[in-house]
Length: 190
Image (cartoon, rainbow, N blue to C red; front, side, top):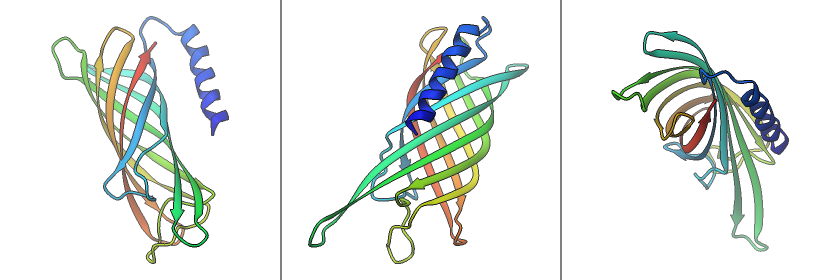
């Protein structure tokens, strides 16, 4: 996971050097946490990062594509004798298509919405519980995601943002799972 994030940041740095003045690219870093139908015993994430490219203007609406990655790390403590600690890592990869629209007169406040696909991977144990309350083993799940967010431009390049992601995962054992993620963070437009 660290290698992937490092590669994402290096790619973004190269694109920043070659970027044009129209600022079609942006790089975001956020703090994620889950809401609603949570997974595992912790709703707090570790980090989320994303990259966006805006490829079309339709009047005031800008269309683009993005890739977001959210990473959660949780330690479960089992109060048995002896005490057991189980470490779980959950990663959500979310490619999507989005649209953004300025909603203030000075165009500093933008509303965005998107639709995409989620790849959820859990290592060393999935952060979901089955019907009996037992943690499940390593697993990869897939499903659609919907996204809505607000962005406020602090300057022409720097912005703060918040977003909500609704993820519907289809599990391999035919159970379905809905996850909500809220992300609070900042970004750089280039």
